Image (cartoon, rainbow, N blue to C red; front, side, top):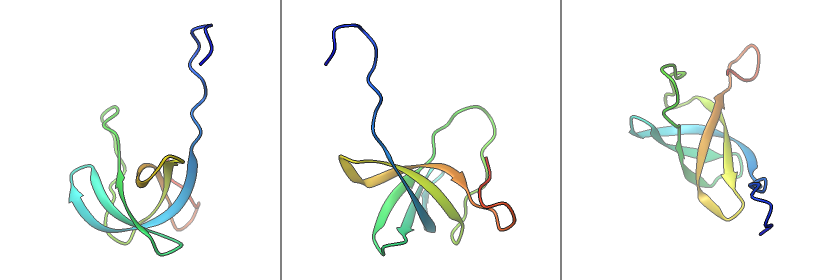
Length: 84
């Protein structure tokens, strides 16, 4: 770790997945394109969240150190690909 006080950039992996189940208000079961299932979650930031339901396609951010869970970055829409 460097001594200059700056936080080093965290490495992440972005993966596409399909939501298969709702576990909680902000927790979901997601099926990756490679067939593996992981827990997908969304953070509570601000007041607006795109509704996520089973069958929706999402983009996840996953740590290279823990592939068991990922954060939902955005939801794909049929027309434009991704929704912010």
